[in-house]
Image 1 (cartoon, helix red, strand yellow):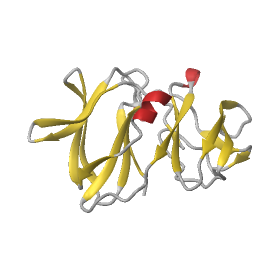
Image 2 (cartoon, helix red, strand yellow; image 1 turned 60 degrees about the horizontal axis):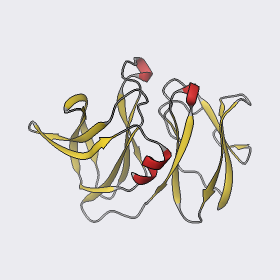
Image 3 (spheres, helix red, strand yellow; image 1 turned 90 degrees about the vertical axis):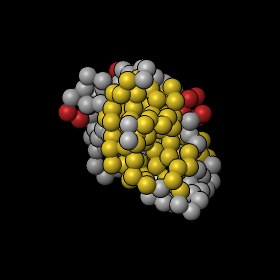
Length: 197
């Protein structure tokens, strides 16, 4: 599970009413993979240390598959979406990467690499995610391993530049835009990377 609600406090995660995290999960961090029984499992997200449930969902899990659950949107309308993670090993010299747009107050963005002033789009015209778009975007894109400068653009103008992103051969990554356009501190506009293997 990944906590991507920029104004939500720390949370506890319960699977079939059993708490599975030792300390509060805070924005924009992840739990790492947890093992659950196949079938439909009940997931609750509670405000840390309380019985106040902000997300309550019954989710289907298939044996021997991996999934990521994102708690997203602002606290007032917090929700969750789940995607399947294909953890097949990338080809030699390649990394796998995907992108989710999880900034609730930002328009559609294009994410690409910047090299010597040349912008090369990788993920184009991506709007704030819904379960439907996240499912459509859950596949990973192979890219040559290396160190990249990622640039996030709105209507052709750069709004976020992330230099020095090292993608290692054989690794699988999710990059997500997080925070708020006018946010400060922990809520500042930014990008986060989850390494899946």
